[in-house]
Length: 330
Image (cartoon, rainbow, N blue to C red; front, side, top):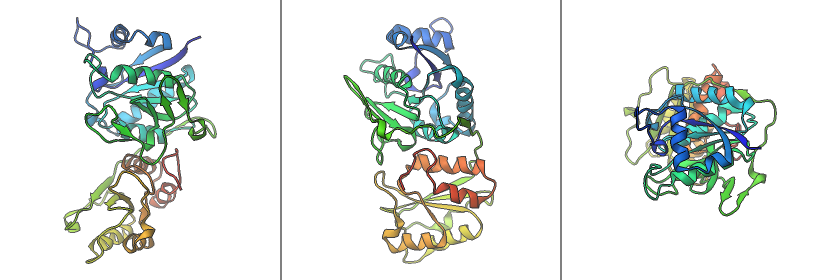
């Protein structure tokens, strides 16, 4: 008996197929178009299509994440897995956000996209979509990303290249699966539900980001009063300039105002460990939170999620330092 897979199409390069009569993408016409190009999809699963919205993924915002979460939550009782086709630019942000919103997932939720449209020669869309449907029927009950024959945990994923097919990496966590002649799933790395499924739609985006560079003038950065969280992107393992103390003084000022301040590194791989150097250690002493080995996408969406769940910042600070969905290694 074929597995039932919900295919949620949101736009992006992978879905650039259009009904020749109306020029409009509709669920039935969209899937008909896919089947003409990828007839194997009908062999892999019984697929139901939903198109909640269609646009370039750079326009994705918190409301769209909530919509996706609700569509998934509404369909979970009747499907064995979910595939989301998504533009690559913000795919890792959506994957991270959904991983926090969908607690104790009972089915796989797999995001995928493409670097070239399905209609192009040498497109990666075909293999990515076939692999995504297969992984949605695999029993890997996580929010994950399929790209270039790999299954990556969604909140460990970041986009690293604009044109290579190997566009997404998981710098601080191994792949959940390698997809070749055989599909090799690293079951020891796969998370399992620890309770009943819960959907958490609450989000709040009152966050500002300050990326450091040599010679930065922090006084030019003035987050508005309603901004609850600030992410500092420093160097290396989490260092910041100390000579004049401006960054440290600013961070202390924000913390005294009751804001949540997070320190992470501009580097992609390796943990942020502020304890290694004087500047980072001092920031920890005054209350700055380390992002450890989280990606930027995982850290910013985690703050958005926690600020939506908690009205008080002490609770946000406490929960930010705890793993929620496998996004960090303590």
